[in-house]
Structures are given as structure tokens and as C-alpha cells.
Length: 495
Image (cartoon, rainbow, N blue to C red; front, side, top):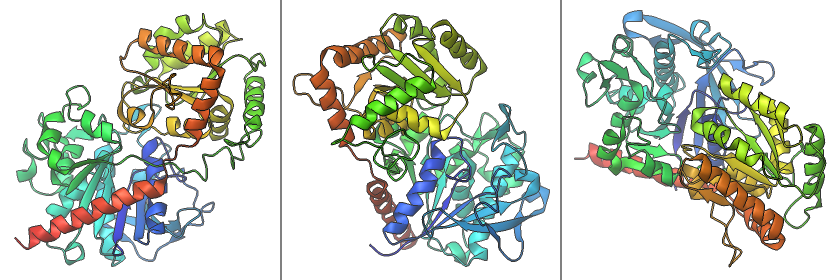
């Protein structure tokens, strides 16, 4: 394939700033695209949590003028660095007023009141930066509501700009629940003309919906798994945009995220007690023993240890878990939980740990080293999500021989095959109904296999560890989609 110029814009990128899976994708996909020979550039805000010295960021000469409609022209600084372990350039948009704060989107759970202006500014800065660099993208890859204004801007303000003459747009949806809904006055900052404030574009209930505008104007939309691409077309998972997405289904795709196996592999993981792999599993037992010690659980090889890592948020099925926990505590199991989020959940699970110190342990917060140690030391990994666009932990778990127990939704359904005890096939255990009974019933099934079907469980581990979801495969999917977008743009220009 011809070398493409790709500009990827995201509000968070690993390792610089992260709140969720979007950061993992925007940190890994560009490296895989670069390996395929494309010229990829990444743009993100320079939040003040990003240490300029640590990452060797260099200030580009000259300021970047960003037209902000009724607010007048704003000025940004631009820093340049690279994605670690690659030569992919990353540009950081610096603006103290918008990004000189502790949080990315909120502080102490309260969203910033000017998030509309912050990310309209960032989206416009992406366009202005491409011009400053004389970089003519074949495709601008926007992600979620924060950069959803980009396809709108490309089709309006920049429609006749020579720099974007042949540029197409892809909008990836990592979580449809968050849409960027704001007071309609944001139109005066977006400054694409009030004619676009209508029910077919940016307007929803007399407010601006930035993601909706992006879905309408992008050349293609991508959900981060095939199942999630189907789910967002339904009332249950569509968050009010299902009718629009059905209308635009001709340009909807579902490319599953990959995993960075340089970081998430027990053969090379520097955070775990002992390395192991499918043909040398003794290290996994060492990791389990260490995990039990670290969380002050009884050291027992015979008890199934179940891990959970994730945000304590409604989406992640924490109410299901809370409702099922008494049932689970009747079993001969151990559970280790790592996460933070809703205050009631933090208190509730801390109390469960105090009440059942030999069976349940938790660390409220997030630590990357602990996340790795839980993946390596657990026998199983629980993800009872109400919805999960892609999910990464279940894929990490496969690589560590830690058998996933998941609700069959989104990427969880796409990546995990149910255990078949007759053929000894499958990679995990799935349940379909979002009920405490379905959750605890499936955990009991998994525990029963662990306890009474030792050979079957060992085969499950082999099946799981041999699975691969490489970024290079995902990148080839994006490469095809970019080519399709570019061809579509060219055809449109010639008709």
C-alpha cells in the first residue's frame, strides 16, 4: 500500500496521560501504523501532569494562532516529543488557561465547566498545527467527543483550505456514553455557522452534541469491536444516538483493539515475581503465592484466586458484583480487587475486605505494577461489565493464563470463547444476563472446573495463552479503512 500521511488526534495518549482505553489505543496504534510504513503524527493536549523534562519535549518555534469565534483568537505553544520506543512524533498543544490543571476532564469527579471551549480549542489547534507543519494528512483520525469537532471543521471552515484538499476523516468511538453535550452557545465558539445547529447535525434538545456532529460529518465511524459496532445501533447501548447511527450504518465499522505484548506478557513482565510462559508455567504459581502474601490472604495453592482490575463505575458492573458478593463469599475462593471510582463502591468493597479478610482483599486506587501482578498471580479474572466497547484486561488475562469470566457484551463477547468441557475448547466463561444470579452462577461454574476438572482447566490456560490480538493486525484493519475513506473522498470529488 502507498505510504499515507495520518494525523491522529486524541485527548489522552499512553504513557503521557491516561484515564481509559482511549489512551492505550492512541499510544499503540500509531507505532503499529509506523511499522507498516506510514507517516503518522499524534496530537494531544499538554496537560500539566505531563513532565516536559521526563519526556524530553522541545518547544517548537513560534506560537499557534487558534480562531475561537466569539472568544477571539487564542494562542498556543506547541511541544514536540516522540512515542517512547518509536520515532512517531507527538505534538503537545500548550495553553495554560485550558490545560494548566490537575485533571484531564474533571477534578474530584466534577467535570470542568469549560470542557466545551477546551476541546473545541484543541480540535481547532489540531487543524492549525497541520498547516503550521505543512503536513497534508490523507486522513485525520479523531477519537471520541473531544476531537469530534474535527470532521465538522474539515467540512465547513476548512472545506476549501489547500492543506486539506484530499483529507478524509475517521471518528473512532471508544465509549458512546460520553458525547460532549453543552450549552448551545458553544456554536459561537465553534464558529461554523448557526445553520449547522439543526437536528440533523449538531443540535440535540436545544443543546450542542459534539459527538453527534462528528458522527454526521466523518467519512467513516469506527467502534472498537465488531460486537460494539452492532450494540450501539440498539436502544440499550445507543445512548440516544442509535437512530442516527443506524442511519449512518453504511459508514460504520468495528475494528478490535490490539494489545501491546511488549508490556503485557508474562515472559517479559518486569513487575511480576517470576516470568513464565505456556511451556514453563511454574512461575505462575510463584506469582500467585506472592500475590496472596502481598494482599495478606492465606497462602493456598488449592484455592481459586480471582482478580479484578478496573474503574469502580456503573458501566463495569460493580453493582452486579456488590449484589452477588454475599453468594460468592460462601464459596471457597479468594478475590483481589484493584480500582477506584464511585465512593459507595470504594467504601462497600473496603468493608467486604474487613469482613472477609481470608477471602477478599482490595486496593482502592490504581497502580500499574499491581495491575500486572494481579494478572499474573490470579487463576481467573472477572469482568462483569454492563457494556464494554472493547476491553483490554480480558485480553491481557488470556496471555497470562488467567481465565476470563466475562459478561458477553462488546469486545468481551468478541474475544472470549465459552469453555466446552467435551472438546476442551474455549478460552473462558461467559454469562449473558446482567443479573447477580448469572454472575455468581458463572463464577461457580468456573470454580467447579478449577476444582473438579483440573485437566480441563489446564487446557483452558493453554488455549488462552496461545491467543494473540496483535496491534499489527489491528493496524492492517485501519490501513484498509483509511484507504477506503481516501478512495471515497476522491470519488466524491470527481462526481
